Amino acid sequence: MAEAASAAASRPADFPRRVNRLAARISPWWIYGLGLIPAGWYFYLGAVNDLGANPIQTFEHLLGEWALRFLVATLCVTPLRELTRINLFRFRRALGLLTFWYVLFHFLTYFILDRGMNLPVIVVDIAKRPYIIVGMVAFLCLVALAATSSNRAIRAMGRLWGWLHRLVYLVAILGPVHFFMSVKSWPPRPFVYAGLLALLLGYRLVRSIRDQRRASA
Ligand code: HEM
Image (cartoon, rainbow, N blue to C red; front, side, top):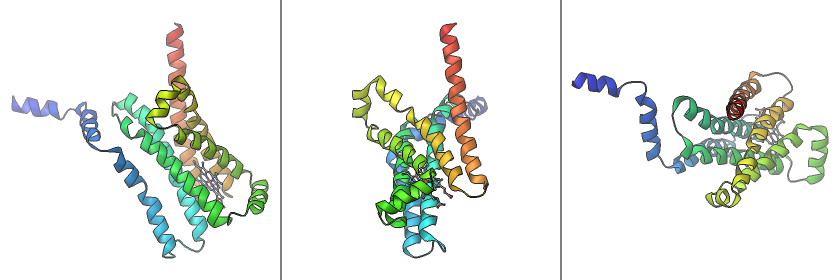
């Protein structure tokens, strides 16, 4: 009897339930705290002059790449719940906002440290490197998403909120495009992020086509 009970308890179906129970006990603030560790660590390495020969560019690159990592994590939450029943929805806003914070730090590094807030220099830079415009469009989308991420905004905006938050899909396209355009050769990293984001967007596209077909059948 006891054996049967313990076998049932360790069934794979119990795994999502256990993860969900654990997740319910973890405050989303932990996600913010842990998520900001890489930024703090790179800032520290920069301050002690341990970021290599080109510290500002390295800092800028690392922050941009972490923004993509958090974007991937944010977009994983829905398919994870639908495909495995692991529900990490209570962390989705924190992951999305971490994406925003990392892009903001990435932008500020470019604007303040890299270009010394020199607007004429930045204008020339934009003309020479159009991927900066692509990044700026993605950044503006993230500003709109972050500004409307509170419960109050969700309540006030109703259906409009859902429509506006589809901008995250545009960010998921523009982020890798910006990455591809910024590199001179063909390193594997942009392919990895582009592949993961294409998979996550493709999943949603297939699901929405399937739902529309079901609704019209
Ligand atoms: C205002 C918006 C943005 C500006 C001004 C900007 C600027 C830049 C610049 C100057 C570089 C470095 C290129 C080089 O010299 O090698 C860069 C690279 C990069 N950016 Fe952005 N960016 C912006 C938005 C974004 C966004 C929205 C994302 C992602 C969601 C992103 C992710 C990256 C990545 C992953 C790299 C390449 C890192 C690497 O080569 O290791 N950026 N960006």
